[in-house]
Image (cartoon, rainbow, N blue to C red; front, side, top):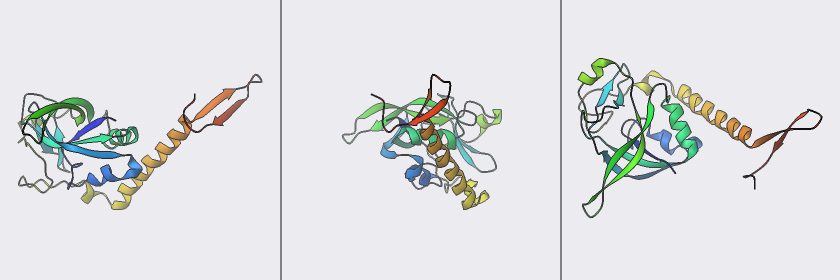
Length: 191
């Protein structure tokens, strides 16, 4: 299963963590904490105080976060939630993991970064770790601006679309010799 590195509102204890543990979005299993091998600018900006990891390796700080193993459904949900590829871009990143014996190992995982951003974002303060309630005073405002029912509807819409996509993918369209279309549903993979 793919590995995903989260550094912002999807981390444990942060405003969107509930999305990772909502099984209707797919499966996500916490693997370990890690930090980026290279420094990156982690900035907080916008009217909602969103944390963004700018895809500018070598600038900023080494960023701490969490690695999750996710199934395909969760990866698709995260792409949808992060509005990838229009808003965020899913890229691979090298991460350093501290092992129990004090040694480190490097792991590669997907991360949602910004490759398109306002030029002044590079002049903003950078952080090595994100906390919505941190000393920076930039509390994440997304949930305060949207009602719970709107968020629930957005998740419900994703779940419904996923079910329709699964049903579509599990349906074969057979064209008979008379030219009539027939849908044939099957369970499980074709042998």
